[in-house]
Image (cartoon, rainbow, N blue to C red):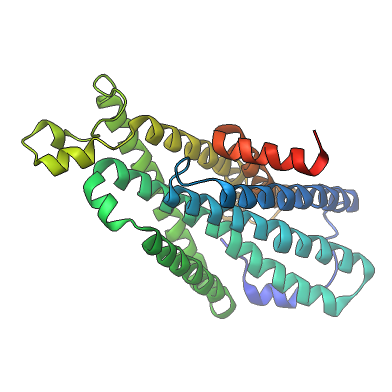
Length: 314
């Protein structure tokens, strides 16, 4: 739920008196450290992705991770510095600067974190299609198609975010519907993937077809294509993205719970304090993801390790 944009524009250029100044300062310090970590981490991930050959990581998977890292990098470069600048400008008493920075912060804050959720949804759909429709997937899911689709998603999310400027009520409705759709889609895709992998777990040995189509009378080319499906590599990619998704949920869930409480009970001092901390936790998610990529994706970890050794020496 977004705040009324008119109220954001008309809000007085000072900090909320019900929120202690030490909390603002501590929150600013945390965001400063998190912003630096986010920038460094995601730059390393983006650099690593450019160096990893396609024989190690599938091109489509690389593109998705690249876009996730790009969205997280935007949080570290744009959103968090705008938040820090807004607080510092408010403390300095620069009324005009506060209003401009506040608007820029809210727009970017609605755009980039929402983009991460949309990308996670697209990844879940991609993994679902790869498992359940391997033949069509190989024919339809090409690099140029993925790039075109993701470009559209970036522009569509930007356009939907700009709706808040004209009608915040309509934005709230569309954002809540999109949130419910994304979360339900991700849950459905990964649940179906889990059930399918579990059902075939006893028969999977190395390279096998993930569906029962292989058990029926298939054409020779169909069998040859289906058996190239690397179930072990696929399983690893699914589990890796589940870690990223769970981290997303853990960082975003407290803030959404706070919004529900505000919607039911109104804004109180406790919810104001909690909301500030909840927003910061969302930002921290962008600095956590690079560590997850390095931890769970061996190919990225190797390249990042080599890059750091080249920078700092052995």
